[in-house]
Length: 182
Image 1 (cartoon, rainbow, N blue to C red):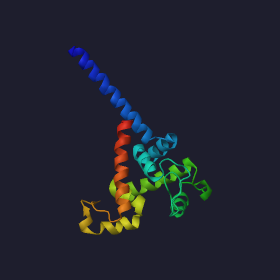
Image 2: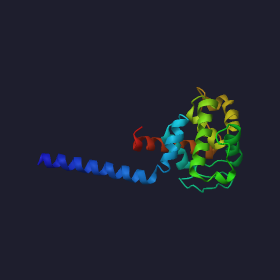
Image 3: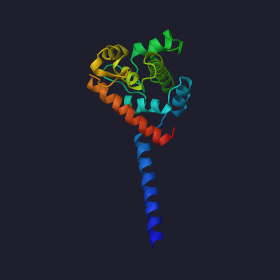
Image 4: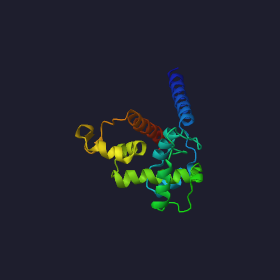
């Protein structure tokens, strides 16, 4: 009898866990993995982080457009896309018509984030995510306020939208890490 209870509990636990992971995989897809994995590796960024950014920027809708003009999976603004593609030499053949192409958008968006993360904010994830959402200039200004910074990291983000964005991306990153076991 005790063995049946233990076996039953184990089966229930396993089934509940598998069901939960299945539900999470539906809520947190890993679409466009061939591009995410490739460009994340090339640019030394955790692919789960790229998935988390895409999840929060466009929910994997390749033709997403924001009211302020951000476009595609990683919600790039036209000037940013041009700057990354041409000025930084990521894609010399880029035209704005390419922005909704997943391989192009993920390549440019991952490069842009990687530059913020590795070069501008020296590996500080919170600051880089805030800059990806609100702009590097805003984050640089916020970092000058000692009441908003602790050990070089923003602990207060004055834009509510950006504060919620950073929290959502970090939460999604935790889910992707669990699902993809990286």
